[in-house]
Image (cartoon, rainbow, N blue to C red):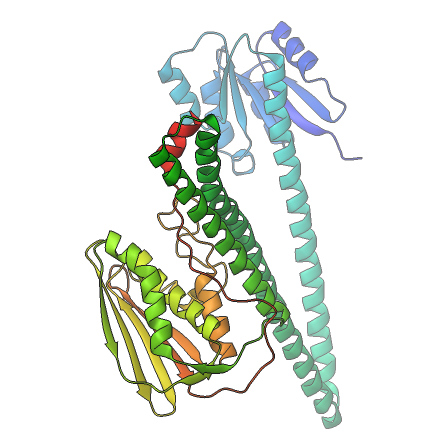
Length: 450
């Protein structure tokens, strides 16, 4: 059982002290009385207190003067003081109380439960500080003992013969290995904490991203079920429901693709692939979104012979890069798509005039669940999986992908390098992602659910 905690009660009225004792009756509290400021100072010199409840209006030394003297002593400078008063209610008096070091200012009559709860908080803080102090002292003693043992051992080693030098060197190697192991453990712990944070952010993002199209589906379905929709409105409702269902399917397929890659179950259907046709098909998919933002898409294609690869997966890679460029390029912007041959490699590059990538985030662009803005209130949706899938699928094809950007609002360039031939692999368990565009029509959803 822990020792009782000292609490100093200062008031020049006996009835007030009795009332405080009745409120704070607790076997873990040692309530110490003081009927004046001078008596309170004497008690502070005798022992340490977890908390001081100090009346403001007292003869001789008032509460403010007493608090200043208590604060002037190093040992009691950090002792929390709660002022109690029935008279001095003006802002100037309250300000003066806080100025001399009060942590709180309560007006009489006060609610006993409020006072008890405040006292309990400061008592707990005191106990935590005391425990930390004792632990620190114990650690310092242990450190001193350890240092003394090391010094004694060093003196002993100074008198041994040359044969013990090998043992000393071995000890140094063991110590270096221990420090290296400690550094690795700390690094692994930091990485695990970072992964946990990313997981939490991802779960919040996933909930938001799944709920957005679902809200649209529910809203328009409600409109259809109400029977109030005219043929034009019904057609629009069906279109929005379909597009948002496809968007949800896209999110789920992204998650399944990452799961297949991590578990090693994703395989490629290898065959001749005309990259230009793959790129043109992906451009057809993103063109409506680009046209809606008046984004100009420039093409610079060389004649490339077919390469060996998985056509569906390569189209998934290209579509992710193109849709990413369109998403993060503002209105009236520009996206340039290039396809060229370099020695035994094929180079596909997407350059945009968009918002760019900060130097801090650039190394993490291709990490799964990584987003420059991971909050649910961000302007651009997504789970942070698109670029990770691009990297995984590119590496499965034996290629590489890199991102470059000069910084905020400086645009970005994603460059994909693929070998012209890769080794054949078994068929994958599932097909690639199909482009889907989410329409939440938020104002209409709000109207339909109203």
